[in-house]
Length: 90
Image 1 (cartoon, rainbow, N blue to C red):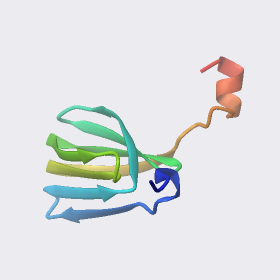
Image 2 (image 1 turned 30 degrees about the vertical axis):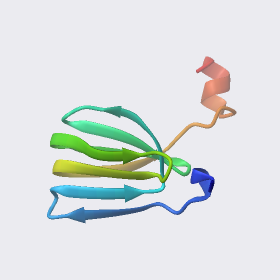
Image 3 (image 1 turned 120 degrees about the vertical axis):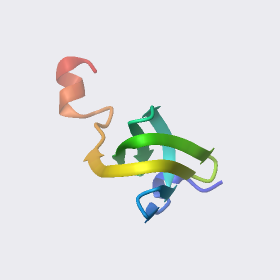
Image 4 (image 1 turned 180 degrees about the horizontal axis):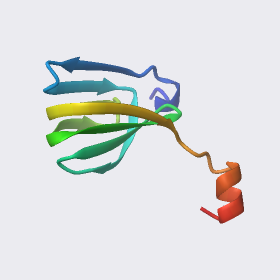
């Protein structure tokens, strides 16, 4: 099985209503207004209205989302050896 952390990440957004993601290793949290997905070394936060995960396959790294997407934001994840985790015990 291919290591997801080495898999390329891609996204396709159609008419702000259907989002297809590849290279996803986990979904950290989700509700109708926000989904936080983990890809390679980053977190992807998807914000919108009436968001729904249509398909989730972590073996292949594929996620499909429907709803009105209003924002896509990438942010770095803190690694287990990050300075903040070491300082604050996170």
